Length: 149
Ligand SMILES: [Zn+2]
Image (cartoon, rainbow, N blue to C red; front, side):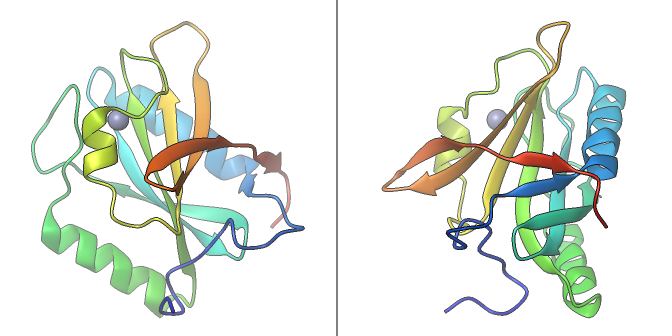
C-alpha cells in the first residue's frame, strides 16, 4: 500500500481526474516562461483533484529532458507531507515536440499510481495530455478543469 501522501488519482472509479483552473493557468504560464527549456512540476491535492503545484528546477538545463535535483525533490515531498496533501502527479513540458511521452520519459517513470502530464508548446495552441502508467506503457486519460477549491 502507498503511504498516505502518495496519491492514486486513477483509483476512484466514479471520480474523474480534475485540475483546478488556477493551477492549469499557472502551469502553462511557467512552462511558457521556461521556454525553450523544459519545465516540470509536482502536482498536489487530494483524491482526484489537483489543487496545487511545486515547480521543480532542473538539475541541468535541458531542451529535451528533465532531471530533478535529489535534495530539491525530497524537500518537495516533505512540503507535501507537512501540508497534509497528496502527491498526485507530475507535469513536464515538451517545448518543441508533441505531448507524447518519450522513450526516456517511460524509462524514468517510477510512480505508476500517479498522473503523468505533458504540455506541448510545439504548436501555437498549447496541447495538454495526461497519462496513466498501465501494463508497462503510458495510456492517455481524460480530465476536467474545474473552478473548485
Ligand atoms: Zn518528456
